[in-house]
Structure formats: C-alpha cells, structure tokens
Image 1 (cartoon, one colour):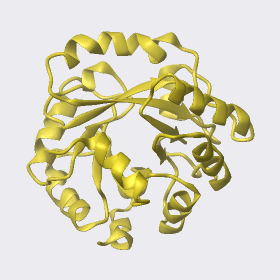
Image 2 (cartoon, helix red, strand yellow):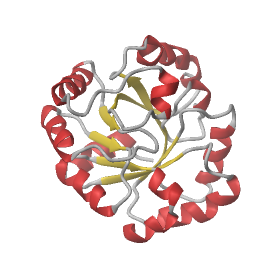
Image 3 (spheres, one colour):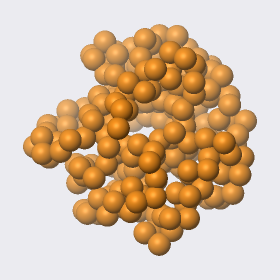
Amino acid sequence: MNSIYQNIITSSAKNEKLLAVLIDPDKMTLYAVSGFISKVNQSIATHIFVGGSEVDKGVTETLVIEIKKHTKLPVVLFPGDVIQITDKADGILFLSLISGRNPDYLIGKQVEAVPKLATTNLEIIPTGYLLIKNEKETSVERVSKTNPIQRKDIQTIKDTAKAGELLGMKLIYLEAGSGATHAIESNIISEVKQQLHIPLIVGGGIRAKTELESAYKAGADLVVIGTAFEDDDTFFDNLQK
C-alpha cells in the first residue's frame, strides 16, 4: 500500500478532498461489519478510521481484522488509548492532545505506546489534536480530563494549530468531539487552514452533506464522519461515488 500520509499530501496539493469514516469499536458489532463496509466501499469515502475514547482490550484488533476482510481502503487507527494499538491496521494517527494541558495526553501515552509501535509495521503519522468546545461534555474531554478551546477564541485555536505544525506534527486535527451537537464553524476552519502548511483534518458534528461540503469549502483536506453513520446509515445514500 502506498504511503497514507503521502497520499493525503498529494490529494491536498491537487485540492482533492478526502473523507474518513470513523468506526468506534464500542459501537460496531462484528456481525454488522460486512454490510456497513459494503456501503463504505460504494461511497466517496477514502479512509477508514478506527478508535474510540473507551474501548476494551483486544476489541479494536478483532474489529480491524474483520474490516480488512471487506475493503481495500486504508484502515487507520485513531486511538483513545495505548490498548487500541494493533499491527493489523495500515497506519496510526499518533495523536498529541495539544489543546489540553494534561501531560499524559501530550506525551505520556505516547511514550507508553513506543514499545508496542516498535513491534509493528504501522505507518505512524504525528498528529496535533485540538478539541474544540461543544455544548455538552464529550467523551474525549471527560477521559482526557482536559478543557477544550472555546469556539470564540479563534486566535488561540489558530496559534495552537500552528504550534503543532512548528513542533513537527504532520497533520492537524480539529475535533468537535464524538456526538457533538454541531460541527466546527467554517470561519474557524478557514482561519486555521490559512495558518498551516500541512493538511487539516476536521471532524465532529457533521450530519449533513451540506455541512461536509461547507467544511471542504472552508479548507478541510480530510473530513471525518462517525456519528452520522451510527445514527442513520442511510446517510451513505447521499455520498455515493
């Protein structure tokens, strides 16, 4: 498989927009995988992300193995914890929660992950992860014990994203959080994108094709959708190739 990151870079340079379907191992049964992935394959999705804030040991690997049976799309880990790392996937977003100040999620978990990553062939993609304030507490906020950045504080969002780039992150991920009540506003996406020379990922709260298109238009290189499919898999009908 070609480099996942290089493909993202190439697509960004060509202004070809990418879409990742996020599958939470806590919310997807093995029985449902075949039918769900069939719909993913027929859609415009380019990547499959797998991960969640709270997942039992071994569940992620079992799910990834099943997913790989039904698709040739790259499967990328989006782990909430070290126990979600598995060499059965193609790559991993090596996340640092740079919007927060909990050292465990800035560097602690990453150090803990190194021995596991050393035994895999995963493509490791350093990713600066920014949690943006939502109307309700998200699982990321609760588990990481960090405060999201307020949506009105655009300068801090921009500066934090840029700091991630200057620290050597290869991707910046703006996240409204799982189950977010509304997506990140276009003006935030646009202003952050203007600061960066690396690809921008946007996720959380996107439940309509118009919101997806709005995120792309504002500058998102890759959009992640999870809850919309969990709530109603007919959403795929709007995203046919």
